[in-house]
Image: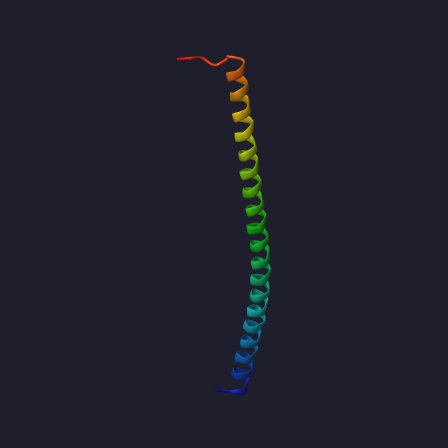
Length: 75
């Protein structure tokens, strides 16, 4: 291999190494964003579960009120 071929290969390898470093940094950023999204999603799921629980309690209370006022259909 000639000197110019060798230096050209070295330059290509340096560029590949720089590109790989950029990819590693980008992957680190993507991991951080993915983790943030997962945490946000889990918070939303917990909020929905809390809302569903509260709605269930309200539904039970409304049903008891309807029974006391004799508003239920006796089918």
